[in-house]
Length: 327
Ligand code: NDP
Ligand code: GDP
Image (cartoon, rainbow, N blue to C red; front, side):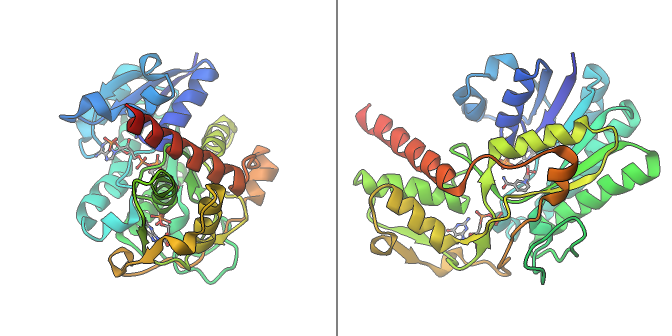
């Protein structure tokens, strides 16, 4: 039985990845940071009905000793490093924390693996945000990086540290350059979930308007369930490597709005307003991934269309608001 350690287990990807690894018969150790709200913090794992199947253990990305102790104790065969301050917009307000958790935190996990379990296979949650102000209409593993936020800068540090540990110490360290991936478990501050939650509230008469920032930014949005499958495939390879994971289809935030409102029988133009409050100091205008390498080497392709993703998210938010309204 493979033992897998997941940092960021309480996040969107941590929840789906845990579910997948449990289905594969793995022992899943989930690292949890100490919180005064521990009773609500595992909601995603609870929602998937797997919270009692995971061994939740204390640790923090900024506390190297806690990471070393965890790895010494549980001797994981695989380490999935998903923990991060992952919200781009927040990274301008908390650049140093973002650097510590998202950047140095990854180096801490790599150091803990190198010291306590160098034979373990390591996955780094890299991000398409690293491409930032790209000039390429489609981005792949060879595309130049030009990060546009403290988040992306921190992710780039973590990405290159992963590559460097592979090259310096021969570690089985792989980096997944994942494009945006969403689901009903996506954090509510991200634009897709903010939109589907807004659609549900407007449809049920709980709100009239939804205030957004830049509607013209284009993103390549896939489903998180598909993307965690790619993480597992990367660690199953004999040789570690870096892979872009994306759908290859890109649409604007505006088009996402149109599709989400129309799924609920609404016209986004009647409800969406624009606010400068949600504009960013520097924007990433276009992301569109070429996952050809993942398709050829991992046999990975996405299975969920954007239409199906939006329908699942809107329906889940409608159901959630109906439940709390009827309580
Ligand atoms: P989430 O924001 O949903 O989850 C982040 C996780 O990191 C949470 O479990 C959070 O814990 C944990 N965390 C934050 N700070 C610390 C800390 N100091 N110590 C320990 N744990 C900490 O992210 P996603 O699941 O969406 O994404 C997973 C990873 O993939 C992230 O690294 C993200 O940056 C990256 N990524 C995501 C993409 C996406 O589209 N979703 C695209 C590309 C990369 P808590 O619950 O306590 O806050
Ligand atoms: P990101 O790609 O990791 O930054 O994911 P987000 O979901 O946070 O943002 C995706 C895009 O939506 C970015 O270009 C944002 O500028 C844009 N956007 C427009 N309005 C909003 C908003 O109200 N909230 C968020 N989070 N993003 C918005």
